[in-house]
Image (cartoon, rainbow, N blue to C red; front, side, top):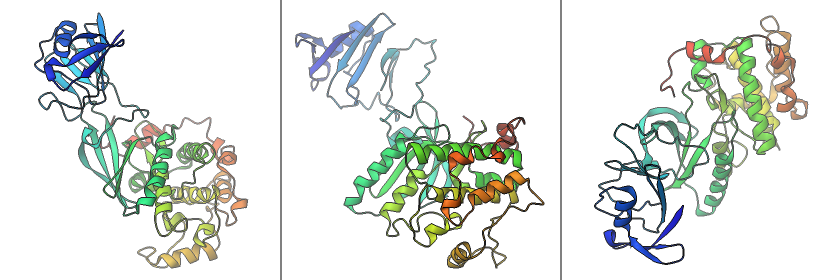
Length: 402
């Protein structure tokens, strides 16, 4: 491979190219014509500063330039250029024959060159936690993503912390945690490009099926525990807002935790600090009273989520038929009243024991995510063929199946 550097790209067709030793070579237009055998009217320069020119797999030349000028007549909204057989994107330049179908390179979590302009909005798929979630499609690859936008008015001093939290969010890579591809902070809004889970949330799924039988619940719980173990022990993150709407599912039978980075950001940028960020319903007693809390506050939330999935209703019964209206009454009930239990006449001893291991007022009495992985409820159905993919898809079609 021969490296060719542009010393002055401001002259369009007459841009002077020099090799790695600084020797003058030829104009950019002439190089493109000779190397690519393409008659192109203007010099091309990729805004990332790198073009890989390839002629039918025979010769390759790398152009390095600081030119950020993208010619409108060749630019598509996704950052891809097409002029006849010449195709240019962030991966380089290549010749595409008329009979060849160009298969775009799919976006990976490690890519960090995404722009919000690269996406077309499809529709709103969720609201909550201070923001809105849209289904979007990448213009070049056709991939679907979820775009979460959170409006927040914060001081300049908080931006560095947000950037750090978003970096943690983006660096988290586990099969049991929703992938964060890229994050942006602009004009008082945080925009996060996330993996799209086409089955929606566990809350959405519960509306369709009302209750989830134990074998499926054990399979769901196993994936959630693996996600919590990753957050707690690999990333040292307390989720703070574990609930059915933050557990997402897809047509492949996967269950993934989402919003862990968002809750951490809100916790540290709101006036409420660490105390009241998250959903009150699933908040542990130690958090409600403003005490110190740790990873096991997420275990309390998990127990309530599973009990709700099993019974079809929130574990703390409201005195009003329309549900909990007064949040302070709910918090008093969680702190002062006995903890909810799984009815022993309706559920297996293993499930009842699992809920009890999660829903303890004293966090020291709760098992950790790692300890719960070995609980008899999790291993009870290991020999049973539990097909979560079929179970999830049988409840209804996905919005957009990947």
